[in-house]
Length: 131
Image 1 (cartoon, rainbow, N blue to C red):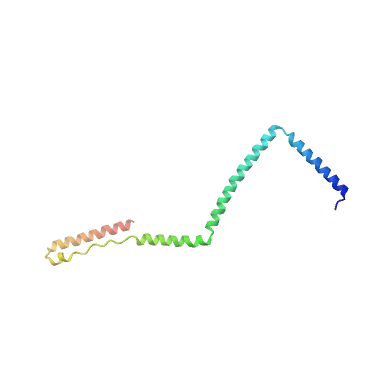
Image 2 (spheres, helix red, strand yellow):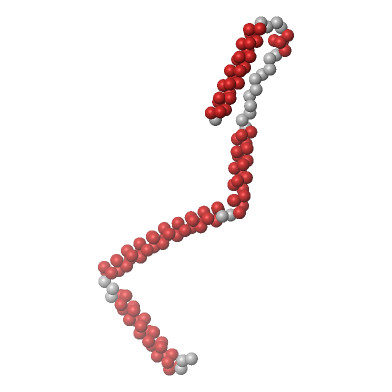
Protein backbone atom coordinates (compact mmCIF):
# COMPACT_ATOMS: atom_id res chain seq x y z
CA UNK A 1 0.00 0.00 0.00
CA UNK A 2 1.30 3.41 -0.92
CA UNK A 3 1.41 6.40 1.32
CA UNK A 4 -0.81 9.40 0.52
CA UNK A 5 2.21 11.52 -0.40
CA UNK A 6 3.28 8.90 -2.95
CA UNK A 7 -0.21 8.94 -4.44
CA UNK A 8 0.03 12.67 -5.07
CA UNK A 9 3.44 12.23 -6.67
CA UNK A 10 2.07 9.35 -8.81
CA UNK A 11 -0.84 11.50 -9.94
CA UNK A 12 1.58 14.31 -10.90
CA UNK A 13 3.78 11.87 -12.82
CA UNK A 14 0.78 10.44 -14.68
CA UNK A 15 -0.41 13.93 -15.54
CA UNK A 16 3.02 14.95 -16.85
CA UNK A 17 3.29 11.73 -18.86
CA UNK A 18 -0.13 12.28 -20.45
CA UNK A 19 0.81 15.86 -21.35
CA UNK A 20 4.09 14.71 -22.91
CA UNK A 21 2.30 12.06 -24.98
CA UNK A 22 -0.34 14.57 -26.12
CA UNK A 23 2.39 17.01 -27.17
CA UNK A 24 4.26 14.30 -29.11
CA UNK A 25 1.06 13.29 -30.96
CA UNK A 26 0.25 16.89 -31.81
CA UNK A 27 3.75 17.42 -33.24
CA UNK A 28 3.78 14.38 -35.59
CA UNK A 29 4.52 15.36 -39.22
CA UNK A 30 1.71 15.05 -41.79
CA UNK A 31 3.59 12.42 -43.84
CA UNK A 32 3.87 10.15 -40.79
CA UNK A 33 0.16 10.58 -40.10
CA UNK A 34 -0.67 9.69 -43.71
CA UNK A 35 1.55 6.60 -43.55
CA UNK A 36 -0.07 5.52 -40.29
CA UNK A 37 -3.54 5.99 -41.80
CA UNK A 38 -2.62 3.91 -44.88
CA UNK A 39 -1.21 1.12 -42.70
CA UNK A 40 -4.31 1.19 -40.52
CA UNK A 41 -6.65 0.97 -43.53
CA UNK A 42 -4.67 -1.93 -45.01
CA UNK A 43 -4.76 -3.77 -41.68
CA UNK A 44 -8.51 -3.18 -41.34
CA UNK A 45 -9.17 -4.46 -44.88
CA UNK A 46 -7.17 -7.60 -44.25
CA UNK A 47 -8.91 -8.24 -40.95
CA UNK A 48 -12.35 -7.96 -42.63
CA UNK A 49 -11.32 -10.37 -45.40
CA UNK A 50 -10.00 -12.94 -42.96
CA UNK A 51 -13.08 -12.46 -40.79
CA UNK A 52 -15.37 -13.16 -43.75
CA UNK A 53 -13.42 -16.28 -44.68
CA UNK A 54 -13.38 -17.61 -41.18
CA UNK A 55 -17.10 -16.91 -40.77
CA UNK A 56 -17.83 -18.79 -44.02
CA UNK A 57 -15.71 -21.74 -42.94
CA UNK A 58 -17.27 -21.79 -39.48
CA UNK A 59 -20.78 -21.87 -40.97
CA UNK A 60 -19.74 -24.48 -43.55
CA UNK A 61 -18.16 -26.68 -40.91
CA UNK A 62 -21.13 -26.30 -38.58
CA UNK A 63 -23.60 -27.36 -41.25
CA UNK A 64 -21.63 -30.33 -42.56
CA UNK A 65 -20.57 -31.62 -39.15
CA UNK A 66 -24.16 -31.56 -37.92
CA UNK A 67 -25.45 -35.06 -37.11
CA UNK A 68 -28.85 -34.20 -38.59
CA UNK A 69 -27.19 -33.33 -41.90
CA UNK A 70 -25.23 -36.59 -41.91
CA UNK A 71 -28.46 -38.54 -41.50
CA UNK A 72 -30.87 -36.60 -43.71
CA UNK A 73 -28.69 -36.22 -46.81
CA UNK A 74 -28.19 -39.97 -47.40
CA UNK A 75 -31.90 -40.62 -46.75
CA UNK A 76 -32.88 -37.88 -49.21
CA UNK A 77 -30.46 -39.30 -51.80
CA UNK A 78 -31.95 -42.78 -51.44
CA UNK A 79 -35.48 -41.42 -51.79
CA UNK A 80 -34.57 -39.41 -54.90
CA UNK A 81 -32.85 -42.38 -56.51
CA UNK A 82 -35.72 -44.72 -55.74
CA UNK A 83 -38.26 -42.22 -57.10
CA UNK A 84 -36.30 -41.77 -60.30
CA UNK A 85 -36.07 -45.54 -60.80
CA UNK A 86 -39.72 -46.27 -60.05
CA UNK A 87 -40.98 -43.37 -62.15
CA UNK A 88 -39.88 -45.18 -65.30
CA UNK A 89 -43.05 -47.10 -66.04
CA UNK A 90 -42.71 -50.09 -68.30
CA UNK A 91 -44.77 -49.77 -71.41
CA UNK A 92 -46.28 -53.08 -72.31
CA UNK A 93 -47.68 -53.88 -75.70
CA UNK A 94 -51.44 -53.91 -75.78
CA UNK A 95 -53.02 -57.31 -76.08
CA UNK A 96 -54.62 -58.27 -79.34
CA UNK A 97 -58.35 -57.66 -79.24
CA UNK A 98 -60.53 -60.76 -79.03
CA UNK A 99 -62.35 -59.79 -82.19
CA UNK A 100 -59.13 -60.18 -84.14
CA UNK A 101 -58.40 -63.55 -82.61
CA UNK A 102 -61.88 -64.92 -83.37
CA UNK A 103 -61.86 -63.90 -86.99
CA UNK A 104 -59.84 -65.88 -89.37
CA UNK A 105 -56.56 -64.10 -89.86
CA UNK A 106 -54.08 -65.47 -92.36
CA UNK A 107 -51.04 -67.10 -90.78
CA UNK A 108 -48.66 -64.69 -92.54
CA UNK A 109 -50.29 -61.73 -90.80
CA UNK A 110 -49.80 -63.37 -87.38
CA UNK A 111 -46.14 -64.03 -88.17
CA UNK A 112 -45.73 -60.42 -89.28
CA UNK A 113 -47.43 -59.24 -86.09
CA UNK A 114 -45.13 -61.46 -84.01
CA UNK A 115 -42.07 -60.03 -85.77
CA UNK A 116 -43.37 -56.51 -85.21
CA UNK A 117 -43.77 -57.19 -81.48
CA UNK A 118 -40.22 -58.58 -81.33
CA UNK A 119 -38.78 -55.54 -83.15
CA UNK A 120 -40.65 -53.20 -80.80
CA UNK A 121 -39.36 -55.10 -77.76
CA UNK A 122 -35.81 -55.05 -79.14
CA UNK A 123 -35.94 -51.28 -79.75
CA UNK A 124 -37.22 -50.61 -76.22
CA UNK A 125 -34.48 -52.73 -74.67
CA UNK A 126 -31.80 -50.97 -76.70
CA UNK A 127 -33.08 -47.60 -75.47
CA UNK A 128 -33.06 -48.84 -71.85
CA UNK A 129 -29.53 -50.22 -72.29
CA UNK A 130 -28.33 -46.85 -73.55
CA UNK A 131 -29.87 -45.01 -70.59
